[in-house]
Image (cartoon, rainbow, N blue to C red; front, side, top):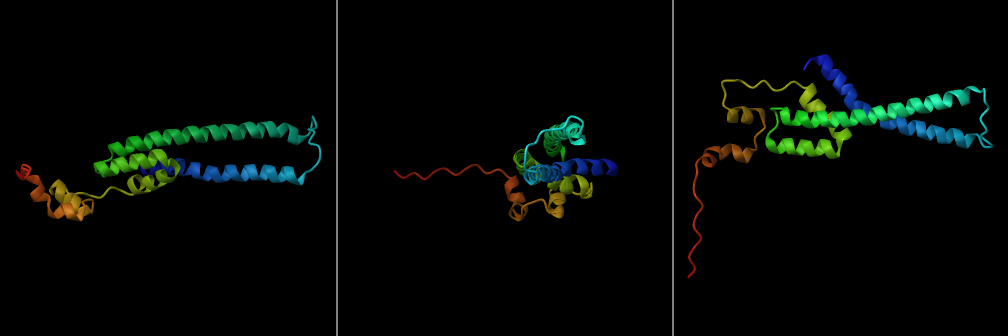
Length: 163
């Protein structure tokens, strides 16, 4: 992926988090302005506020809907990206899929930084897959020592005869 594409994806990924703070600030400012101006709120037909309020409200509504649709599209993109990435084993893919689905806006920037922004580790082609995983730190230490024992098949033992 090109660096410019990564940057635009990062901006789109961080936008919902920024938008939450923007939305809360606008809502609180509307309530504060309404509380500071007591009295009847009768709009004057030719005042700038009566003309700009519907335009601003519709603009804010459109921005809100675009943010919601963008967040849903990013969730789909990242879940598909989890299954296509080679850096994750099956357990990590399941974990990231659940995190991205249930905690989308919080997990997406972390996934973007770890697996899209940072370059993938350079795995040498002449090493076996187990050596690559051990060398890059992706394998559990207990399974690294028992890999030859796990490769051979041994049938289960028969239960003892207690008669």
